[in-house]
Length: 148
Image (cartoon, rainbow, N blue to C red; front, side, top):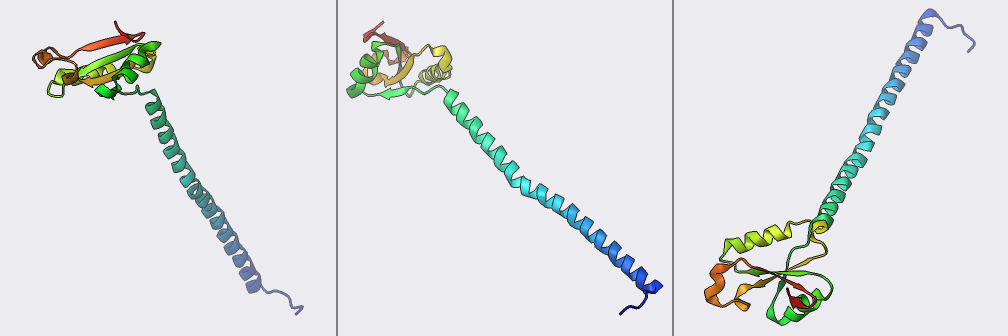
């Protein structure tokens, strides 16, 4: 038990110590890699969350589309709604591409530039005689419950 260590024993001891030091350094390096990998899901989650927030902001800033009005809801959605703000009514005639283009142009106006104005769309067949459908598109403004 109390023997002296010979040169071979001492060399083996140092080699073992060097081997263990190298092994521990590898583990330290791999733990750095693992830390990077562990952060990767958080980073991808952060990017996905930022994309969600951007989409939500775009939806919030996107102007609302024109509300379709049928004859039974005319008084409530146009006349009554225009009591304290402007309501623009676009006459919609599906076979006429100019009507759709006009409505798209109105809907693309940012809310901040609309001045509180609301948009409505109504099928022209409820409002205009058939022989006048060729003169569309048309937009009417209501304020204070009256056509202006």
